[in-house]
Length: 160
Image (cartoon, rainbow, N blue to C red; front, top):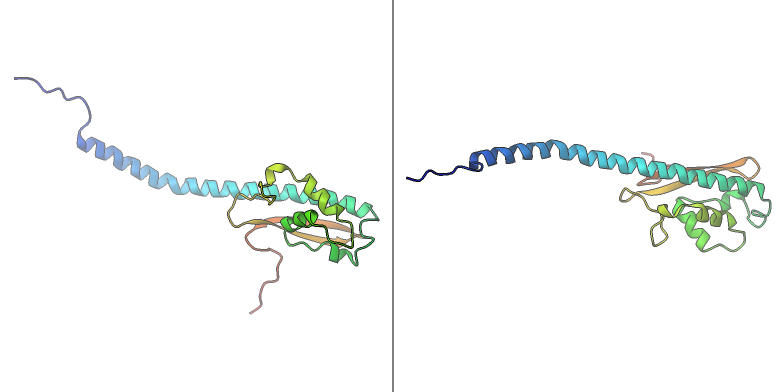
């Protein structure tokens, strides 16, 4: 009689290994997706801080240049933006009646890694965008705040 050579794993051993791997995947997967989501959020918040710094630097230049608002009716009319994207779009299509150098300077100073090929701003989280709030006047100085969110964080909440 020939002796059988038992090299390899039995079916039971393979099933046990697959079951252990399935349990590990079930435990690790939620943590991994949570980690990736947090990473995207941190990246967007960091990019919002960078955009805020760029815009604030240009606002300082804007305040020191008396010719920029000469044709604008009010500071508030000139600086109404709800998103950073609208500010960039305004630089591409300047309005008549005032110098849009502020918008153009902001656009020129945004690093290309923040821009998509179509000229829109790139966010890591789907459905999010960079919202912008500019406060102050030319006389008192302007301040910009940028946040990355799904909806405008400064819009009026409906009262009930």
